[in-house]
Length: 233
Image 1 (cartoon, rainbow, N blue to C red):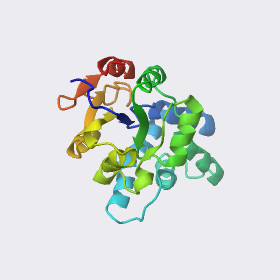
Image 2 (image 1 turned 90 degrees about the vertical axis):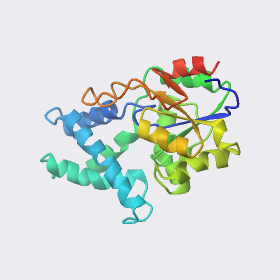
Image 3 (image 1 turned 135 degrees about the vertical axis):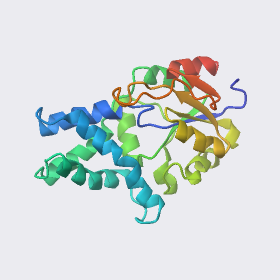
Image 4 (image 1 turned 180 degrees about the vertical axis):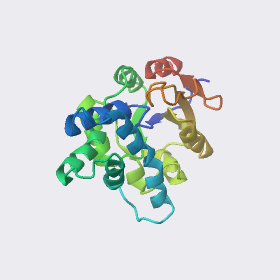
């Protein structure tokens, strides 16, 4: 596939741009001590991510930013881990672990190359404050912040993908959705976006190994720098 007509790239963030598991586990260890199985707690917390958003999508909850969903699900995560006594101020600090995640090693050099030719933005379920904190912490060179909170819908609702082209004032076919998750890409393609799959074998710490490629994507790559190569930057 060629990059002809591509004007903007929008990115899934958790797992695609940043290592959520390593960052959350690091903060769990810092705040709760080495006796806690930090990786297991991070995995359990992430496991409640989609069900918590589904409560908003189904109408059970009104629009609720991801920080608030994380705070709510943390209570059951800690209770199940035998940590129900963790005080509220520590819980609040744990929620901010999601604001302190590190990008994968290829991300910054790849984004800097891609930004020479394309508009770049996150298209994430993370709320705006969270995305801004991640960008400022690591120097992610976004041109703007798009995603769930902008339209008050969570992916894979079509409103999220539609908003990228609408707000950037370009046709959907001029926007590439970049993600490490095939379901995210399938939802984007259904709304007319082009797609790029990035293989992140370490996202789940080896417990789940994602596919090496997405045969339905326009591009399948192992890094953002390889994506820049394919797009001619």
